[in-house]
Image (tube, rainbow, N blue to C red; front, top):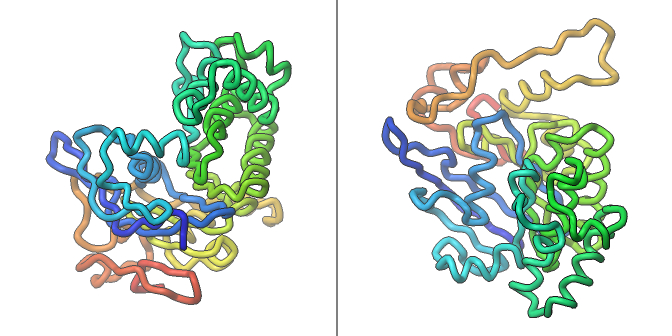
Length: 318
């Protein structure tokens, strides 16, 4: 049984133009010990999907569909019931650690927080475990850093602290939303290696949200490509990246710099922009940017269909 099973997840949010759907009937599964990456341009619904999974969306959000975590339906859980799971068995690493951390609390207090809330440890035990966690994620002089505040650490150190908080209760699932975007290349590599080591050591399921296909090609077991709030292609990373079937996925790949590309070869950008959520087309959301589109593409939403084992695509031209 999959650790997380998501079926037809739909998120509706109120806007000046009425209700919009940043996530529209998204379905996928996450397994223990696997890295699943969600990719796509900004505005395609990646982060909203992540926040829906961990139930951190605005109270005005209307969420429908099904989300089963370790066999338990979590969509209908109360906030108190969800709090027993969030930060305990399911945790999140946010994109910008400076906004994820409380600026007026010490690093030690923030890492100790989940331990005191979920594990039953006393203050002394939580303090000792927090030091161990900081050392595990590569924070030098962990004991001294316990009394530091977020502004006294570098961006890379702050991200490590956020990861330490996410690991505190030994979760089954970590959702990481663009965890390396604000970091330099060397620190990016270190953070990714740290996350991968955690997956290998503890069989954690890692859901990584990113727009960086170079990272995806290195670490992903499975890939979900999102566009216009919908999953348009999904499957094993090797198949999706080596033989993309959706025109949008091919467009993303064509815009990716390649070290083996001939000198002088120009990247091919995808023309146009992502659709406005308040004016979504009736048919394929990508049709207006697609050079393969025909009239049938605009008349109805293409269903996801399996091309080969584990590889599915929502395109009538695939």
